[in-house]
Image: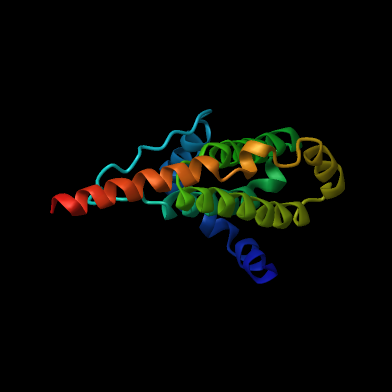
Length: 169
């Protein structure tokens, strides 16, 4: 909300210092969203650890906080490129998720994307021009992104293996 943005703006120098000392955080997120494909490892054994789903969301939020602190020094082309890269990655993940929880994480990341870009656009001097150029990149969700088919199949596979594992024990 606006209080969060006010706090970020009030503490820009401390935030920028933290990012300069911890640049691996942004590098890790940029490496993640640079991937052009999404593939999940099927959970074949109920004892397998689940992925750390919260980490990408946390890194995404830190990335947007950094963008807010840098927005006035970032060209509109670079800003639109960064925002587009984030949205493209999460839409691709959403289209290819094999479990319901990963579908939920991708959906949350897309929701976060739109919440954070509102804050970024509100902080820009040429907000309307950048918003209109960014809007040109947006498209309605497609059938694959909206489909739950692969997620349901992945959940069926997990439950089938969980029952088989329990039967052996």
